[in-house]
Image 1 (cartoon, rainbow, N blue to C red):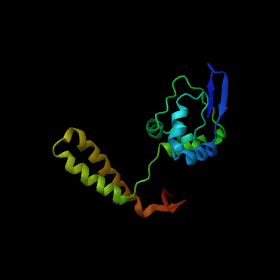
Image 2 (spheres, rainbow, N blue to C red; image 1 turned 30 degrees about the vertical axis):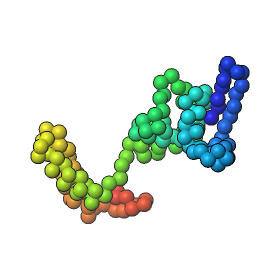
Image 3 (cartoon, one colour; image 1 turned 90 degrees about the horizontal axis):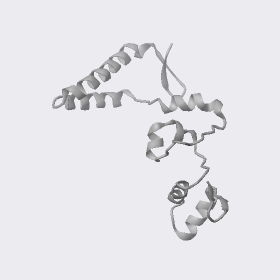
Image 4 (cartoon, rainbow, N blue to C red; image 1 turned 135 degrees about the vertical axis):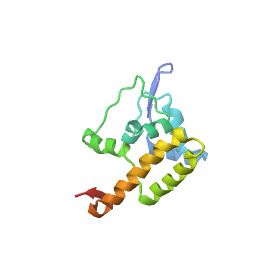
Length: 144
């Protein structure tokens, strides 16, 4: 974090080791201290996921309006963006989701029935393709 205090005329750079050291000495949480200071910082370094993934960005309340963003090692962006827009679900999770959506469709069919049908179609597609898929790379299925 780079903190600039124009009124008092000083700049301070803080790294994680400093936050941990101070946190231990005052029995405080370095994580929350860093976030508190980041609100007024002029320069903040984030992992890609804090910027690219909208769920994480919203969770940590990062506001990009008016920000200048520099991606170091941008050759990794394709993988990071793919990861941010992907989710891994196993069949058991899909079956549970299908069951819950079926129950929720009874009182509110306009909302949940279309979702139920999408999940049902996905489960059906997986069932048809299961024998023609191979496991690769951390046991994820891929078409041949």
